[in-house]
Length: 196
Picture 1: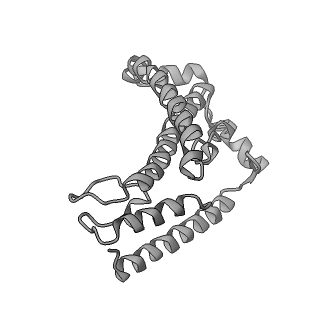
Picture 2 (picture 1 turned 90 degrees about the horizontal axis):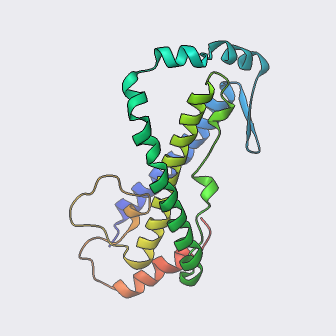
Picture 3 (picture 1 turned 90 degrees about the vertical axis):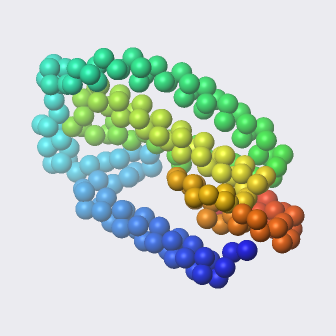
């Protein structure tokens, strides 16, 4: 059973997350850029400074670490499994979440491509950034889909400490807390049908 202390701590964590989001937005405005829809716009003078900092492709190739070039095929070979995971998890969500009554995860909230707006990056660096944004965003997207699935089927904490818990985990039932399990499981399921 979740104690009042844990509820209080979770509320404090949510408040701190909101404060952090506000502080990050304020910092962004101090960095001389604004977000207009999906487009990031820098001040003209800063954009010019960024362009001066960009290395040419030849400079980049000469200065680049050889081990990074050698492992490039391995890194980019992972695009195939990533695309397959993306296809499968999106298919699963599209088919099953409506049946379970779970609100779907918006892919665009997790997979964000905006680093191509940085004029200090050359075309290869922008490609790297796009690939990394896709990979890390995809993992976060998958984590949210799977965490909602876990909340639907088994919202119970593990007996042992687990590293890298998803954001829903803290609110799960304690391991071994069987009191009114079925009733509370239904409450968790109903909560998944409400928009976040």
